[in-house]
Amino acid sequence: MPKRTPRTWTEREKQLLTQRYEHIPAKAIAMVLGRPVEHIYQMAQRLGLVKSEQFLTGELSGRLTGTEGKATRFVKGQKPWNHGMKGFQAGGRAPQTQFKKGNRPHTWTPIGTERITRDGYLERKISDTGCTRRDYQAAHRLLWIEHHGPIPDGHVVVFKDALPKHENITINRLELITRGELASRNTIHRYPPEVKQLIRLQRKLERKVKERSDEE
Image 1 (cartoon, rainbow, N blue to C red):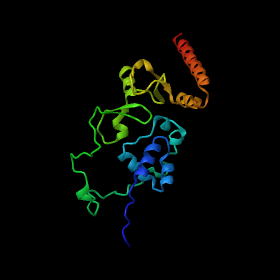
Image 2: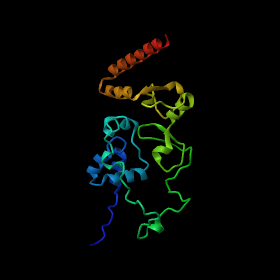
Image 3: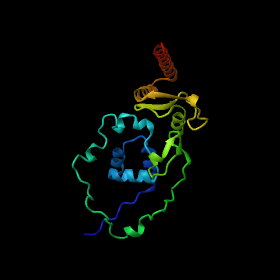
Image 4: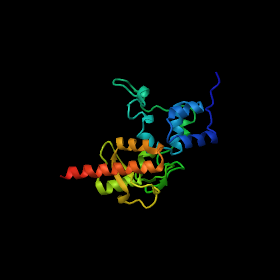
């Protein structure tokens, strides 16, 4: 039986993945491209793509329901496929084409490198683990942690205004809110601008009232 040649990614497929990966579930993209979902994750990692904060805090990610990845999770007592195969080597030219210790891919960047996401957020590389999502952190989150310490579970740091999120990032532009409030805020985008402003002002007033009551 002839060996099956891996299907090459076209530039159009890479472009579609780049445009949709941040906001669309990988399974949906896999169906559109006719590829296994594992291929979507692998190429996204090669291209340095990550899910947007809005996606990760929304229902599409499955994180709120706990269903994401359920079918492929290890269960208690289950053994990995390579159990007992210490020192296992892949066949073919794998040993010659593997990265040697100390080698770095052409996409490698040093700690301190900054980039702007598709959503307009400034991110800074703070570690070099090889996992893009872990190595790059939003600059506004880092600034908040520098002033106020770790971000509590169930909370996010957001901008109070609609100015560019990658310019003039100051602590006065930031606020800490719950993920529930973030989800609630995202629902107002369907309203006209003047209604949005009224809703924001009402919520701001409610927060001020709560702060006063907590101080008394």
